[in-house]
Image (cartoon, rainbow, N blue to C red; front, side, top):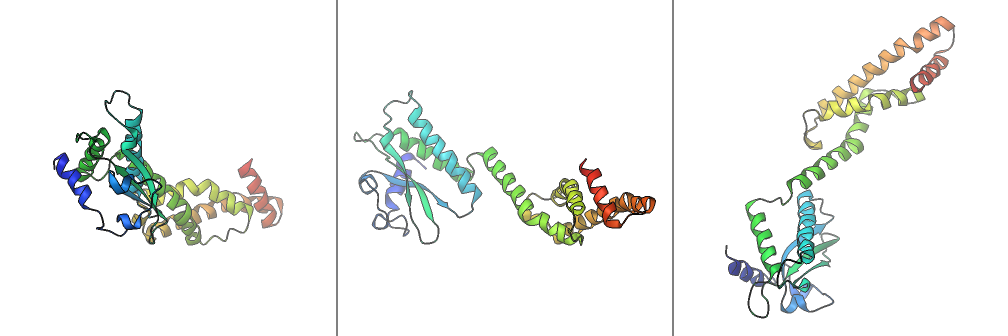
Length: 237
C-alpha cells in the first residue's frame, strides 16, 4: 500500500464505527475535525496484552520523533494522543496524525504512522521482547493468584498450624515449577497438574512431620503439638 492510499483510507474511515465518528468524539481543539485522522486506538481495560504492548511502542516511537532534532520539517503538532470514552470499555487512547502539511507533502509524523501501520499489517507485534515480558509477568501473576491456592486445596493439608505454613513456604517454589513446567499460560495448566502438585506437597508435608516431630515426641515424651512447635522453630531457625 502506498502512502497516499494509506492516507486516503484514514480519511475515508470517518463514521465507520461509533467510537471513530467525529459526531461521537469531543476534543478541546478542532484538529480531529479538520486536519488530523485516527490511525490507531487502544482499549484500556480490555486485557489485551498485545494492544497494550503496541500502545507503549507506538507512544515511544511518536515521542521519539518529537525528540529527534535531525528530522527536518517535523512539527510536534502533526500528531497527538487523546482519550475517548466508550460504553464497552472505560476508555480508548487514540493516536491522531496529520498526513499532509500545508504544502501537500507528507508530514514526518504521517510517514512514521504509515510505517507503523505497515509493520502491524505484516506482523501484529511491534516489540516482541516487551510483549513476551508482559506475557510472562501475567503468567506469574495468574499462578500466584489462582493456581497456587488451588494446589494448597488439592493437597488436603488444613494449614491450621505455623508448621503447615512454614512447610508450604519451603515448598512453594517447587509447586510453582511443577505446575508451570510444561505450560506457557495459566490456561495450559490442567486440573491433573494441580492435583499432582498438591499430592507432592502432601507427601513432603507428611515426610517432614514423620522425620522431625514424631521422633521428638517419642524421645522426649511431649505432645504432638509441642513437638510440632519445636519442628517449626527448627525450620525457621
